[in-house]
Image 1: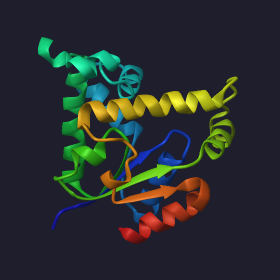
Image 2 (image 1 turned 90 degrees about the vertical axis):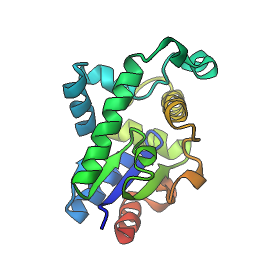
Image 3 (image 1 turned 120 degrees about the vertical axis):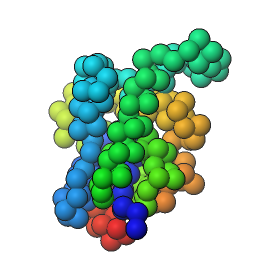
Image 4 (image 1 turned 180 degrees about the horizontal axis):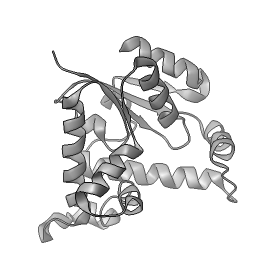
Length: 192
């Protein structure tokens, strides 16, 4: 029997990381989020901050996507993608777990008994949440949300050729603003 893995993709500020951690805790299985960044840093030799930032930027921006930078050979982002891909695959093979972000939904699409979840919420809910949870005090938390989501979508599209957040790419999409964090945890746990 294949291992049961839950991947959580999420809009910034929607509570996806919190939901993933709570689901894992309730199920008694590991949750990998910042731990993935640490493992990629260890295997690549790059700093955790570099890995974290690189995971939300499509290599070279729009022009690289349009013109394909791969014509000139792999770069740091491609190297990190390969390491990340291998780590996520290995973690899924080791046993049941929850993996937050890092295109795990795509990486594990054919490699594990995988429940692919996308967490989203309206802008007002996410703004309130990042101000409360992260002490976000910038002039425009709305713009920070939009920018972060735009980067995540571009990164996901670049490496997967799939539209990030598009319902057809997931088994389940949940609106944490409407349902609440606890209900999202309960729903995912119930599907395990």
